[in-house]
Image (cartoon, rainbow, N blue to C red; front, side, top):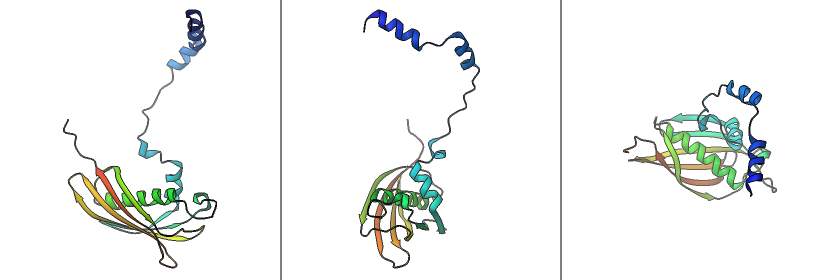
Length: 164
């Protein structure tokens, strides 16, 4: 790009005095942390999850499969199952009062496909906390038949003080 083109681009992108004055009066609030803005799918799950029982290290939830989270065959998608077990596993791990940093490993065995309006039961148990990790087991099954939909193992990294 030649110098004349660069100058025209700068002029086109620069603010006029009136625009600069208006912009200088705008107060920008600090942007809230990520966890205050769940993703589109997290919003769907959080609206649909019902906590049936919670105690330290164990969370039992119910979830009715909505049409929006199903594929063309009318079954809950594997991605939706992964998101669901990830969230409920986090509920169980945080029941100890610890803060989680991130899922380090999520291993899922998909065993059956729940359909629209199937009522699911999700049971998450913390197996252990070691140093800066938490290990959780999650079982997803159909409430009516008891058929297992998915078995999961989840490894969380826990937040802690930085040594830097």
